[in-house]
Length: 121
Image (cartoon, rainbow, N blue to C red; front, side, top):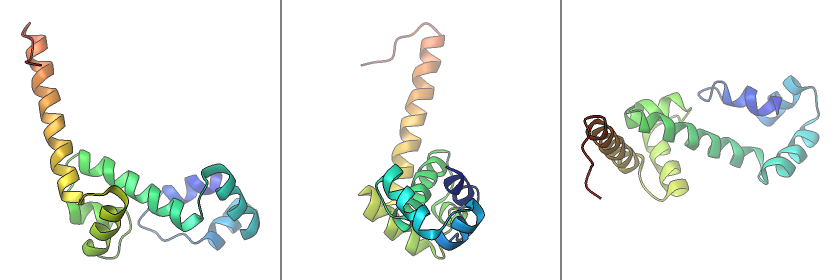
């Protein structure tokens, strides 16, 4: 969907449904209907879900919470933390810590396997 690509290409830039409809060459109503049909949600909900998804990727890659919130378009770190927590059921900081711990464990396990050692269960 062209509108989805346009909105996701720069999450820090607020893209209204009106702007997206114009850029996609359809009416607001058509775009809103399409979003409900394709994704089962309104545009604001889709945008929030997409922003949180991209935030998860950045946090997993080690970006800080304030940096991630800014990159994904939240005006303040506290607004990012609130939205992320409501969506994911945990704070972005705890998500980042868990994701980094899992990544370290996988790196350690793959290093042991390449040396012929089997990691414990």
